[in-house]
Length: 68
Image (tube, rainbow, N blue to C red; front, side, top):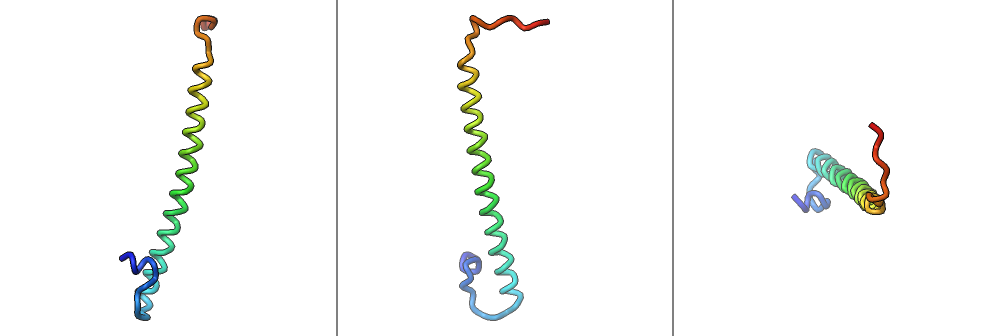
């Protein structure tokens, strides 16, 4: 299967070539999606770290009571 994805399949059967191209495109699409999701995850992790540091900077002893 890996050889088929890399394009090392011999023969000129149009169905095999078509399937190989389809699988190569699918792999490329999945790799692009993975890069996008990793970038989104990194951004969310950074935002979560920033939110944690913001919460830690609040001095609870000096906080005013909430209005009811």
